Length: 353
Image (cartoon, rainbow, N blue to C red):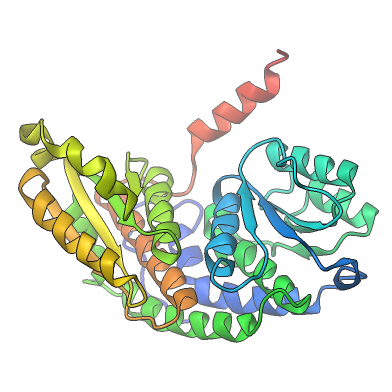
């Protein structure tokens, strides 16, 4: 892995290095998922649906799964970020339980629900209750490797295994090859992003102290846009928002008719693009950028040249991760710890209602 000094004035958990390790993390995850014992999982099919359960840095793995299977799989894939599974889940639904810590209460609740309904479960988990339950039940378990400092730094370890498992049971074709190609593309991008004066550093300077509004489309750029938003929230400890084309053309654009004196100082639009976007969506992006330029601090057109949707998704994710780290560096913020999230979890645990 190409290394370079971290520009972060404080980085107590090593988030810079963990972010830079994404390509290697993806490669390791492909191998882990290819080697895990799936038991009779393939024989239990054909499956009528797939559900991925996870929250936060683990939940984004479900979003990746949905985005990349939608144009490929012959069954619907649904993401659940909460305590309950949809009513349709049963023995013909394959459930992925995704938890970096192995103790996410919402995911554990869904997993217990799946077991009660007779749905087969594949766990992707760090050490914790989820891993223990999966082992005791004889469910396939892809272990999240030790040493990753935060769930959001484990997107490769969490998002890659479900895609490989679906290929192994026949619901996807050629996914491992696409993922290896994506890891190569991301590795090449990483080698530039860790250097001073990188694209990520320049984008962070342009965002500055404004609030990013990240635009994507359903699919690769939509997942990447959501990831940009949450990484700015957690790494830079700053507000950020996300919306999606073409839906935003039917509502959000009307909301820029007032308060331009405020928005011109406070908001920067970040527009994520990739070569595979629908041509009508490409035109919408162009028109919206023209309309919004006068009422925003800046409009940043951010593109990946990656040909496949798989590589485009991970390439844009990595770029956004580094942008968020540079935003943290500019304010002297430690990107690793998220004390307010820990406080919320502790207060919820103590609640007896």
